[in-house]
Structure formats: structure tokens, C-alpha cells
Image (cartoon, rainbow, N blue to C red; front, side, top):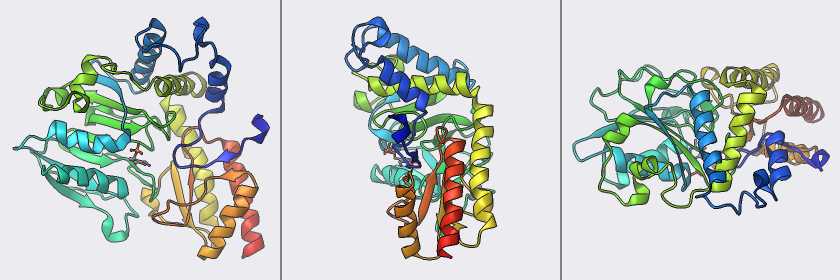
Length: 362
Ligand code: PMP
């Protein structure tokens, strides 16, 4: 079966480590001697307690989180967080700074606007079609938070350093690069990520939230829209996305035990992306769309000389076992999403294919 698997460059849902999938398969009918599948076990059982607690502990170890941080699992994707963040953290006297680096930041801003909250767009890269990450941003000193999107999945740009916000907590959408590198957690009041790129299946959103953010959160909200509900019940106020949390736990175990932690994960990601960017640099047939200093290590966006060639490229790539290389429908072109689970073997196969396609079609 595994020899029929392709090299998967999908943007999300995306490739998961093969070892994780095999582990799920092997234990799917009888989880830990329970005689039940993980999809059949009560979330109130000790079996599931062990899973969720292990996922929380691994997250804390990998990111070196101290006791101020809560690790939560929600549903509704990263998109629900766009709405919950202003709902929870912006009272009528408060304001927030947003940095607009593409579609997902724009959507986050839209949700603050819909709720009539006070916010300011402190910087934007819209002037150049979101092809770069703004630098030297002046943030308001009195903002409740600064919202950033660390990696822009569609445009292929990424913050390589996080700005100095002079103590204002960063609230960061890390949907497409969480656990891809170590982080200085002192800067962050909250991190969130839809699981379906670097963590597991869709349907679960990880939220890492600092206690002081929780202290200032609005209490007068429906239970399911309040972070306090999740923090006080270990994410089990209602039935959590059990299968998603279980898969996340296995992915985190893989990062800790097979890869060896986030420093090693980052080194591997730099090596993988480097191979592809170096090749594209050396070619005058392919061109990256992101500015060099802002290029993402997770989503490599590139163009060919014309759209007909791009179509042919994607068709031929698929025939050659290289899937998911079509750019996002809003921008066109090509995109290789190379999250943590992308393999060096897959990167080499892609570069080899790109070389021969160039020779045949130049
Ligand atoms: N933020 C980023 C950076 C994304 O890439 C995506 C999904 N592609 C989202 C948010 C939206 O995530 P979800 O579908 O989980 O709501």
C-alpha cells in the first residue's frame, strides 16, 4: 500500500508523517488494549485523559512553555479564532493592532470590524500584492494585542523574526508554521493554529493562551465562545475533537522522539526549502513570487513563463506522483507546501521533475 502513496504537496489538509499514519492504522481497532477504536472511546475515560494530557505536556515541552500558558483544543478552525479573539480581548475602550500580510490576516481584520471593535492596521504589504513581510512597524503602546499571521499560506511569505511590540502581547495565527521552529514565547500572549497543515486532521484548532490574556478576557459571552470555558475544563466542556487530538499527540511525539525537537525540525525545514529555492534561483524558467527576505519555509510559491505551461506542469507532476502543486485558486501559479512532514526524498523528486520539465518545455 505505501508504495502507492504520492509525494503530497497539498496546502492543507496536508501530508502527515508516515509513521503517524501507520501508528493510527495499527491501533485503530483496539486502542491501548481498550478493545475499542480511539473514535469509539468516551472522552470522559482515562484512556482519553491520557491522550489529551500527553498532547498538552508534549506541547509544553516542545515550546518550553511555563505554567502561565494554557494549551487548548477547540473546533471551528482558525477562522473561528478570527472572531473569538476580538470578542474575548477587546472591550469597548480597548483597541488592537493588526498587521495585514494577506488573505488570512484580512479575514482576521474583517471579524474585528464586523463586531464594531476598535482596531488599527499598523502595517500592510497589500501595496505589493502581499509579496513581503513589513519591517520597522510602529505599534501603538496601548493596544490590547498585536495580531500577526506568522506564515502566509497563499502568498508564500513568513515572519523570520517577530517584531518588537514593546511588551504588547502578540496574538499569532500560526496555522501553517506551528511547531516548524523554536519560538521565544515571551513575545506571545496567544498562538493558534488550525491543525490540518502541521499538526493533524482538520476539525481541531490548537490555542496556546497566556494567563494574563485570560484575565482580561470578556466573561459575558456564550460558553462555547469564551476561552475561560476551555481553560477551566481541560478543553472538555463538551465533547472535544478526540480523533484530531489523538493524531496531534502522535505528531508531537514524532517531532520530539523521531526528529529530536524544534531546533532539529527547523534545521530540516531549512534544508528542504533550501533545496527547492536554490534550484528555482538557478533557473530562469521558474520564478518565486515572494520577496527573497520574506520567503516562506513552508509554502514555496512560484510561476512558470505562462499559464498554459503551469497547467501542463501540474498535470505532468500529478502523473509523476507529485500531488497538490496547484497555487491557491485566488492567485493561480504553483505552490509546493512543504510542512514538517514533507520528506527530503519528496523534495529531491520534485526538483528532479522540475529540471526535466524545464528541459522539455523551454
Ligand atoms: N490561517 C491560515 C494562515 C491559513 O492558512 C488558513 C487555512 N488555509 C486559515 C487561517 C483558516 O483555517 P481554517 O480553515 O482552519 O479555518
